[in-house]
Length: 310
Image (cartoon, one colour):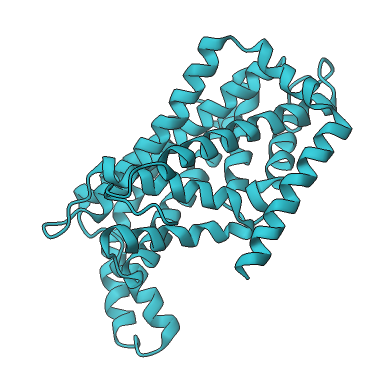
């Protein structure tokens, strides 16, 4: 299975290299970057790496307890490596690297790290859905969208009371495997209002940064305004959470291209090839930073807190 995933990954990346050369030519595709000022590229890169720090801090906050303390600087290599594997392996198989890395680094049992990963992904899905509602309702609701964003920020607090009731309900039937797994997920949801709000704030900050970053990047590569590329950036991030080919090739480009075409903007000044090329370049930006970050982490000395064997 491991070799099959590796083979699929290699074949996918080779196919992308050949397809790009056949459709655009690498010189043409990479020429998009020459239109972006160097200081803007540096700014985009710093924003991307700042999102790594935000995610690392969120994990640190999530796992910290009176018995366990996970400094952000120690969690950061795990986040970088997990992102790398998620981009490399097909069908989101790279997600399983998170519990493995947590086990190697901190001896965190899978019974804790796997449900914890699902809880973190639930936070991500909720925030993305809330942002999507805000973006699509803005033309009709206007400034009332701000009220929705404020309300949606505090909605997770309702989960604390529901959590207690559902834990009691599932605890009685936890002998069943499926019910036991649901019970484990529920017990991994933060029961502290302070921790839950901090987790929510960091989730909003992370996705706000990423959507702004890729909306600005797409606007830099096309004649469109950042308001018109925000939907495309959102669609691209949503596609990244769904199963697909290694690196998200195909699904990411399709999602971003569809977002650009459905933004309501006048696309007479840009061809469909240019739209797809901008989506592909945005995707390459993600992969380059992911691979570059992993290269740095894999070269860390073995005396580092994080194991480098994975």
